[in-house]
Length: 382
Image (cartoon, rainbow, N blue to C red; front, side):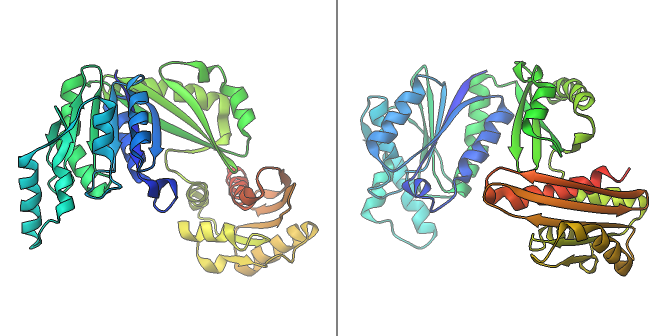
């Protein structure tokens, strides 16, 4: 399995003016092709730094894929930087200039003098036609490394990748392996607890197991490399079954499933109506559930005027008023060091109450509280 790196080029990326969506897209392509992604890098429009990044990548990876910096302006130095990295000069390609002129003519325009810069590429590079833009892409094969330079405009990048680059990579590197990933989503437990349950599995080579922590949710990622999707699925299934045995009811869903959808599906199983009364969260629990399909009239937010001792009486009152089968009262108390959450849940099977504390980044406290509240409902509906 070849190794690869992605270098996204553009000062606007470093300044946060635009989001780098290309790297995420390319990472998924590498995964699906079975290319072992070694590193991703963002570098500004600086000739020396781009060249240095490429040279460093060449010491680690067989495939280096760059995006951006192929435009006609002075601050588009990728062509020159790649030529410098592989110790060749730029050369003028008349056929490229003809393609650029023809494309401008199709739009009833004339290329400017600086567009001519786009007809220069590193000596020995192989041109990749750009059918939806003016920036020519190219391959450069050093024998040990393959450098693929693509435009930064997402539409152009994706088009060239799908039409030309992916088939070329499959053929050149005999890419028969694939990489598949499967997510198990947990809530109501901390990352350290999940790690304790499955820490021996996290040392495996193939499939691999990793954790990703979010406020109130821990994702368990299982990744398999195989010669076919069916083989990868089988490898994943064996490991997922083991993880389910260990982690149990903390797992609320898989892949893209969310707590709010899982919770509403549980309620729908019994045809139960849910009412939500919350304070201190600006209606955040309600908004998540309404977006997932809960009728808005079954929710009530009362701002910051709340007392955790009033939770259960308020839940009972709101349950009767809304004619719901299940009623949750949630009181959130934000703070700079510790944030507290008090929950009361009334169901046909009984009344449940918990108090929880959160000591993570204060900005994540509300999200943690919402996820904890939704998980509390889920766990108490059989």
